[in-house]
Image 1 (cartoon, rainbow, N blue to C red):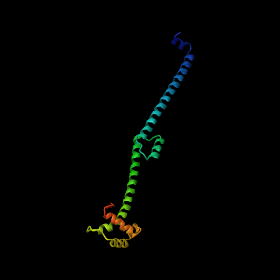
Image 2 (cartoon, rainbow, N blue to C red):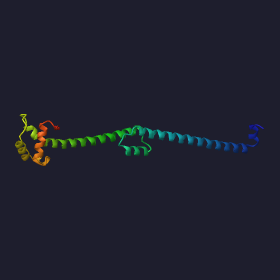
Image 3 (spheres, one colour):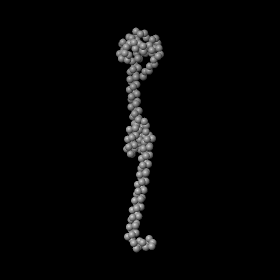
Image 4 (tube, rainbow, N blue to C red):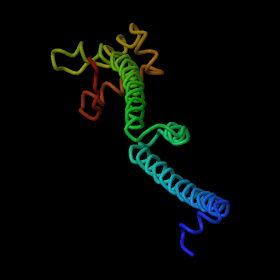
Length: 167
């Protein structure tokens, strides 16, 4: 018996066999496609996570974790967000440095009157330094007593103390 005879004599059997074969093949193809899709998804997500990790910078752990967890941020998008966070961090550091510079300038200005008065190159006498300490409130707040101030100025005049000022 050949296929033509089978179709002619038993069309219901041929129809049933065709349906079953189609269903079996379709299920097999669907399962293979599903597995292929899963594998491609796993590979793509693994690559996405690796791309985000490649752009990671110290101090941005929380941002990196949220970018990995969102399931959609690409490595390039992560790089932009990390760069923005680093810029903000830098701006904050710069502001803190500027605040510190103002504080340092205030401290440096306390000792400035004594340095400015010594234009003639001669060291001041103890009585001149004492008079300066007594009339300058900033010096009195910086140096607990006149003896400390006189000792500081003598050490500076002798070159044992270097001081910097911010202008």
